[in-house]
Image (cartoon, rainbow, N blue to C red; front, side):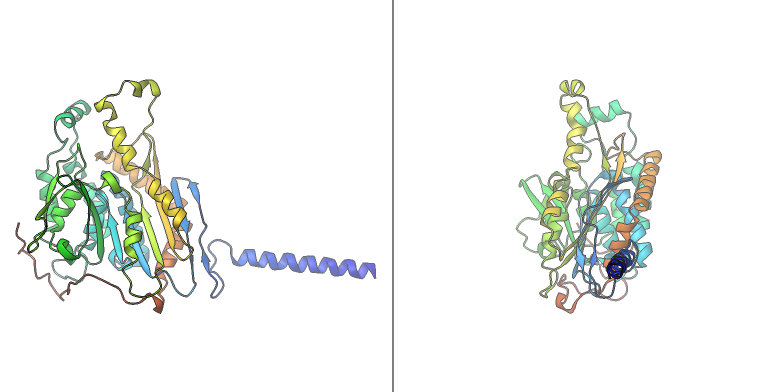
Length: 411
């Protein structure tokens, strides 16, 4: 009897172990989840080889989040990093970026991506003029024109008395790239921050209301006007009887280098249904460190603190940390931020070797975080629930065929 009970116990333990093993095998990384089971992201992946990634969210197997949002940090020439990540997403989805997101927010260099990827083609107002690969080439081909190399002493001296760079070439590049396209023509909803130095206020540009007639080339010029690097810009509303005809704009990175939190809040109004679940993809422009010795910093004045202060302001991780704390299970939040290590990469470093370094760092990062990228693509591919309701968009009727305003914009 005892022997029979012993064998029965062994069989029960073996059966239990087998069931656990089968469950582990079934839910192993990369394996598809069982039917109708939730897809559960690894809550925090932490620091991995090549950077920091973070995921949060539980999405039903049969439906994905209702509202899909892309937020892109500022960072000067380091904007090539999110451009490379978006290039991979376009390649994997087979879709232009604007079709994957209900809202794209971009600060500073992120505004170049947000506006560039939603700028309609002159030949077909319903298709984008540029792919993410085109934006990558934009940084590679125009970075040195926008930020020409100055000897460090000359560059520092210029920044004491005036902006480091002239804007004639920059404005010509933006005029060629964006032509006369207005904000209302963007292929999806946009959110672009600038700081109005005349009124001392934060301004978030959207494609609605008094902002609808703003020219993309003027907006991107103001959105990328980083203090000490480039002079302020006038952004004209081109609206009838506006409260203010123009905004004296500088870089929105002064208050929102990471626009993800504001984008997340704005996204709640983009669907008319009861389900307000959000997929938020936040792309950084590379974490970089500028260590300084105490004894060295002790003697710094304005000149010594100029770059470190901007770097501290532009790399503040508080928005990312705040989003991690407030995310409800129904939402999906993915933060991708490659680590560029040392030496620090300046916002205006356009050297070919630096661009190659950022390319390689991004490649290593995406390879090390393949699971996060796969999870993101899976969630993006899932259909929306009927509870999402219709999309609430801009009041602009997009024509078929060529853009009607091509060549007609006036200052």
